[in-house]
Image (cartoon, rainbow, N blue to C red; front, side):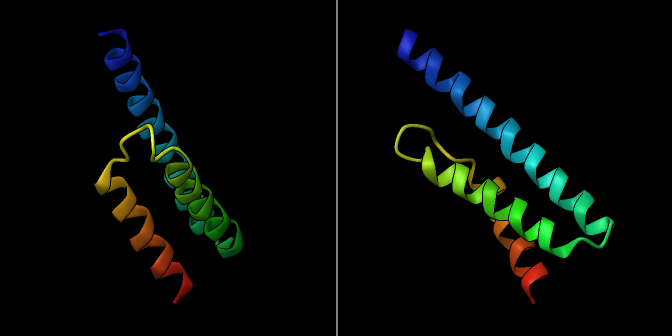
Length: 74
């Protein structure tokens, strides 16, 4: 019961972190700072992969990050 609650809280925290990083990357793009945006998108992906054994990664957020990174790298 406590482990389930802790897992849910960790998933919510990770969802918030990835959302915030995606937002920062978008702001970097608005400022035409492509290098910074790429770095932030990669940081978001690294964070989600780092914790994927214990914390479920939101698949839509991961798709969003991967899509935006791919678009920026074109």
